[in-house]
Length: 185
Image (cartoon, rainbow, N blue to C red; front, side):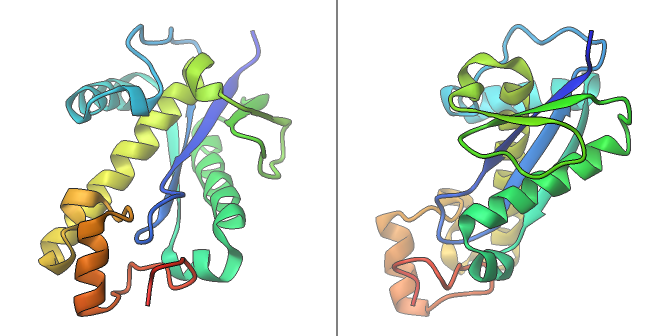
């Protein structure tokens, strides 16, 4: 059986914070029966499944920061975060043979990678990556909110909510805001 990994991202749509990618391989372990696309799970369900993913599987995380997003654009920044996640994973799983990526585009990697639209609905490895990317990014945004509580990042995680725009209009941007995104002063 060929060893493969799934890659997915979280954070393309926010106006603040990093875009985060995760790469997950089961190697010889069986997929967890509760795996789903992260968007179909509550925060509590994601947290519990994340604990199991971290316990049972090999994974890597990749981050692309707001300043990089502003230079590269969100598409290329997402691909870079995916490359970083793969590199992090491949050091622990050198026997990987192929990669499945959720979406229309796959990053350039040293092994075959295939993009799969809707992969987070059908491929367990991508579902695990989806959950890991989402929980890691949300945790980062909540931790940053403890350092700078003015923006309520723990509440909206950087997404463009009405409340986020109100605070942004009043305070201006911080280091986590993506300057190249519409609505960010």
